[in-house]
Image 1 (tube, one colour):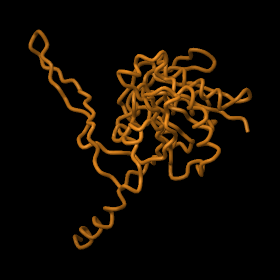
Image 2 (cartoon, rainbow, N blue to C red):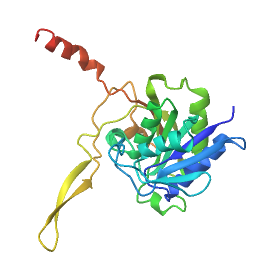
Image 3 (cartoon, rainbow, N blue to C red):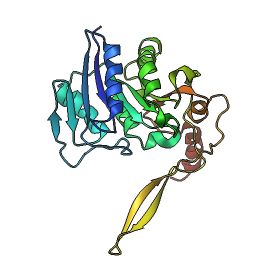
Image 4 (cartoon, helix red, strand yellow):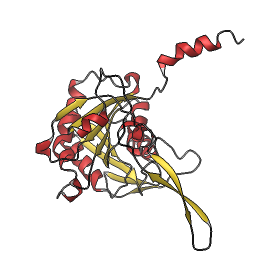
Length: 270
């Protein structure tokens, strides 16, 4: 089967991680496959699964296979599928490679994960990929070393070996590569989304010279994790142990454990 792969990200069309994702896509697609890139014109980190519902998005053709869109990562998925590919859906969407982790509740904010989520909603197999980094790994010659060397094999394994039916339950994958040399990777870990003890973001106020007040989002991820079901390992724990973490996510956010309780609370109201 000839593979058609759509590549996008949230760091923008010129981000170095996007080039790694394109290389991974080309390895997967092979000589007979097709790789199309549609990515934001500027950095869209932290926009989550938002779409530009109330304004048009300018699309610019940079080459026969690369396009930039003045919009969110989810916009780029829609633009790629319905404009660039004329509704001929790709076999796979790769989002990334994000410069930094997308672990635990990060997935709710991440434009990288948001792009993969939109792909899943469109009934397309989608994988979000992020390269973790530390102060030490930022000194590497290639901070994307682990993702570059392992990405194609992992994605191919997910496509060919996992029970991943197209559009089934809108499942998509979130992959995080540890901030170590590829030789130091401990292995691959299927794990659940972890949870930090407090939210990762706050809001700080900044005074301008003329006395005006501006607000700036501050990112302070907590290192304290909340206890979860010990039947499963979490992405927060496994990434610390130098594993590549792979978490299946879905678009349905319903908490089934509480649904029955809610039904009991409401059943006698009317």
